Length: 562
Image 1 (tube, rainbow, N blue to C red):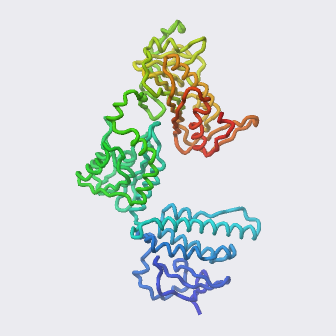
Image 2: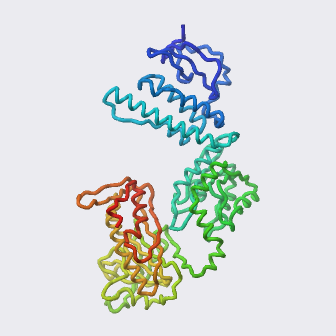
């Protein structure tokens, strides 16, 4: 005898739940008997059970996750089940997948990456039972491989450290930090932020998600500017900053102003002049402060190792100031690409250059907005060369060759400004805008920007155009600086901006066809490197070109590497 159910005849009702609070029952089907969780059964009529109603309220969404010592035995039992030997359409296979995924969710969290990974299934086109069986074996082997990895991960956790919803929020912040976008070529920390109210996530952010801003600012002001945050908990992977250049407000002050109740921090700031001050200031404002769990702290230390190394090598600001011989790079004003703020002119049109221009209007020249590519060449050490305007003008051209030119131009005009001198692409003497300019600062740094090439097509980034422009200008700029008495080594910065959603278009030599990469997921690709003045441009700029291909999920072809 048994109870009739939609999945078969239920021959045995278990009286004791598992660790998961689930009752497993024996079900007889046309394929034989199997074990089913009670939640998968629909009884006709509903069965009489000896279960305490209070026990049945325990589910995988109650926020109390399994301890490692509870989860590991359960996962090992699932690992030992020989489901790969069953037929692909055996109901026990489906039952094993459902029950195992439930254990994974109960261990790592309902919305964890582990649960998502386990939900992936290996698929192939099916043409026969034999191929379907091969697919089934591949799928089970894949899932068992994940289980082995999960068990190893649990083995390194503290045996008495429970995983809670708080760990899940902290994990979310770490995952967000991986998406961070640096606003310029300098080393910056990867920071993620999660804002929680009454147990619910109300905002997430990462550094650079909007206009190169800090993660906390984006979450508190850009996304929750109109919300009441009293009583909220904020999870941030790095100690909130305590100083910003005017008129910006430090993140720790914003947290205090918004009256959050608690801040959970991943790592303290590695800068000894800042470390601990953010935490102290929050505590003085009666805001509770806690730290991420040890495994996540270790993961963040590894994730931000480049930034930590940069701080350790740079030393304090006072030590940096005493190094006086190092040249400071010009500070970007509008993202990474531009050295002028929005609406600020590049300089004034100038006609007093060897009589090249007969008539010139007294007008300011603006850079056309839009997607940009840029190349900077920065001398590594302070130069004693004469960088006055007359000297800069004198060396624009030598031996009948123009050494200082925009990335793309047909005819050129000249501009002067308080901080340097530039050449720009122009169409007529009355132009007040340009889409390509090269500017040399009185510090010796060259900064070239072009907003024209990437505007010719909204769907693609034509790699050949980018590589040709940058590789042809790099040695020219080196020669121009050489003419001024500034020698190598140099530091270069190259980048593309406004490319999100486009595809990299690469022309293969001899084929006459283009190969397209995957769409760029971020607006900006930036890379920096060194140039000794003797390298081939393709080799010197190779790290940037390689990064462009990587961001488009393409391999960097050897024939493009010089």
